[in-house]
Each structure stands twice: as structure tokens, then as C-alpha cells.
Length: 200
Image (cartoon, rainbow, N blue to C red; front, side):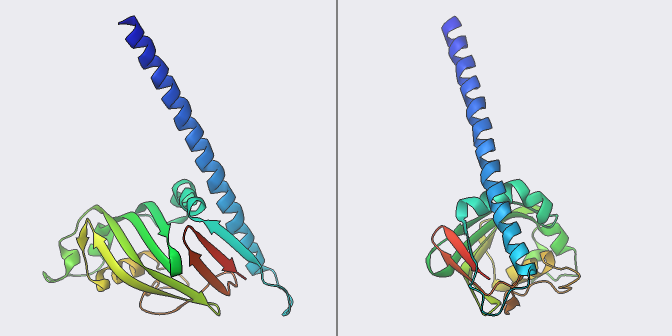
């Protein structure tokens, strides 16, 4: 009995140390991503000669996800939690988050034929597709999306995205069906497996 208790205490201590080390490591990776994002913003805000060499900044999938986990609550709209992305070859992106769909559902009157009429609470939303960015303009191509594990039409994800990206600068939010201007004087961005490279 005593040996079991000692083993249990030892395991609990090891688990606590491992968890603490993991959190510390995640915070370090998140801060590394934050430093890169700050550099991108600073570069975009600094006038540069027309013939200046392009500035390239790469962020790994691990850095982006650590940043979203640690700093996400400070930068993401209220109602979006537990975000995570996966970066694949040829611009492929898979995004996942827990999204409060009550706010979207009650933002306007809905009919029985509207899929969002039946969705309540915070639900897992997953969207997959491709992203391309060149000449200061980005474009997204949505290929599939699910809400709570159920496939939904493109129009539903389009409405959710527009709702949660509204701002003073974008009163209608970001429309996934149209091109959008890249921030911070970003000229292009390329997505490869496990990383994204921004060119300014």
C-alpha cells in the first residue's frame, strides 16, 4: 500500500513537472511567433525604398498554433476559442475552432430552411481549403466545412466568417468569396506543409 502511494505521488509530481515544462515551452514558442508578427507589422509601417530587397518572414505551424493558444484570447473576437490550424502543401489550410453560433444565429431573422436556425451554443467549426496571396491581394477557396461534425453549405461558413470579422474598417466583414487586401504592406504569402512565408 505504501509503495503504491509513493508511486502515485511520484507519478503526480512527474506529471505536474512535465505539464509545467510543456506550458513554458508553449509560451516560449508563442512569444517567438509574437516577435515575428511584431516584426511584420513594423516592417509594413516603415517606408522603404522602391528598390529595397524583399523582406521574408516565416512562421511554422507550431508557432502559429502556440500563438493562438497563448495570445488568442487577446486578439480573436469574443466567441471564438480553441483555434488551431494545419498547413499543407500548395496553399492548403485547415482551420478549427469552437465558435459561439448563438451570436450569429440571433443577428438576424431566420427561416426554417436556414441551417443556422437549428444551431445553438458554442460548436466546433472546421473549414478546409486553399489560400493564395500575391500582389498585395489574398484569395481563399473553401472546399469543405462542418459544424458540429455535420457538413454545411459554403453560405453558412461565409456568414459566420463575415460576422466575426466585422470592424470599423470592414463593416461587412471579410467575404470568403472575394479578394481581400493584405495588411502590413504584405506583397505575397506562400503556404507549404507546416509553414507560411510572408514577403513584404
